Length: 318
Length: 305
Image 1 (cartoon, rainbow over the protein chains, first blue to last red):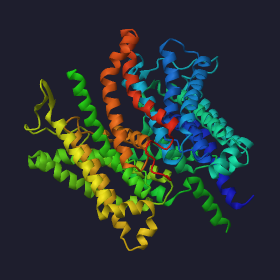
Image 2 (spheres, helix red, strand yellow):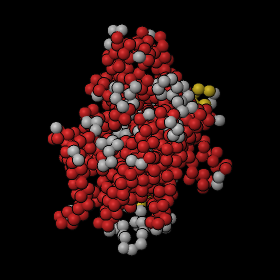
Image 3 (cartoon, each protein chain N blue to C red):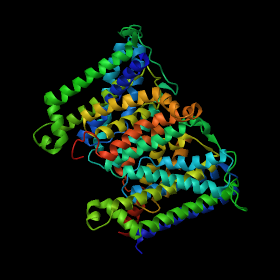
Image 4 (cartoon, each protein chain N blue to C red):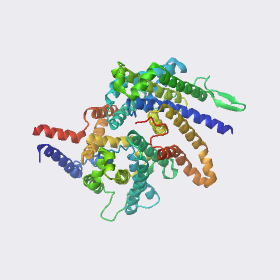
């Protein structure tokens, strides 16, 4: 093992261990807000991991990824509104609905490339936003309060904050592992190959459109899971969850953490949301700092945090 | 019938307004290959400037002219500070960088003007109804918007197709290195084009201001529509932007006005009134999906992009 990867691995392991030990810290210091904040961070990290699958590895610049957060969340919220509380019904419906939406918009959007793809995914996500905002039965613009979290068999109780945090964390670890295995499989190689040179992949006989579509659907489904978690976490779901700036936030997490890096999105989600929390503590107008900061990251730090870690490791070993 | 004509004119007016936005977007993309999400922010800034300057000077027209100049200036400064460094980068970089600019602009506006919206009152000579056909009256301000946007469209056509600057713009779009090698100051040209796009967005914003409230985030909803228009029309094509802007303007306006009634004929009144708002806001996206199925590059594709 080289020194370069040793530094990176050490810091990654440290982050994952710190996430696992966080409830202990929150318990000891009595800082309940910390647990709430990090539950949200972990959930959005799952969404970022799923986006990284298509954005980082697949080169599919989806600007509508927050739509699945909303669809997963609304599946839970709408079913709860109709009196169906069982998580064994709610969650599969959330996943299926997200997968279906991903299949439809993916089938249309993947016919296009580059900027068209960015704009089309953005437009479809906005369409979903307007549809949901127009359904008066489920709160419309104002959103929908969820009075009861998803019910699973005892002893799993989502209303218990520590249990819920560990469930989210476990799913984040699972999602990261799934994406890591996926991108290193034959399937993942085809998708990554299609990112580098689609025509060549097709020439050697791979129907890349189908591979990319399946990849797109997997990412959407995974993000739908994050949506179901988010709705349970907030006890509330509103169209704002799927507004296009939220998709922008997810892209920022992926790029900030490091694209096409297995742990990058987790770094990115933690970094962005902690930074937001920190900046909003300094000034009410914190976005005036965050905006230019983003521009600087884009201009000067393309590899993101993971790229930075690799660079530090390389300097040390040189 | 009166309602129908009125809604058609509303559709025309909305479509032409969208054209101003989409033209700037597509111009910048076609020439600099730059995806500019902050285009909606320039629209918002145009509206805020107009409301402020009109209040200062006490004249709507003077305020509008000053706002237009100020937006042009803001656009050129933004180009020189930020956009210039993004040319030649990945489209994802454009998206992220300009997304950062949106956050900056939104928050700056909140800092300067406060979180409440502003309003831009119309002068009395524009706030009347004129008789366009016997018995049919229409808002004179909306008519004025139609006239101004048509004039701007004609101006753009002449500028791009008939003048020396337009020739350079078109040449720069097809081969920027070659134009630079021939001794044209390509940097200045880009700054001017970006400023022009900004001014078009600002004009759209300030004309829309008296109809809607001037508020933070006003540019973001309409930006998505402008995106849909550029995708339908073919990115980089001004002619495509005009055609699809009118298409989207009509479908959106007429859809919202008459689709609920049409739905009521098919569905029960209760079901129709639940489904109508959601479905009528879907119409333009459906249009986009249909166009994409048949022409993935848009109706008037600019070719290699």
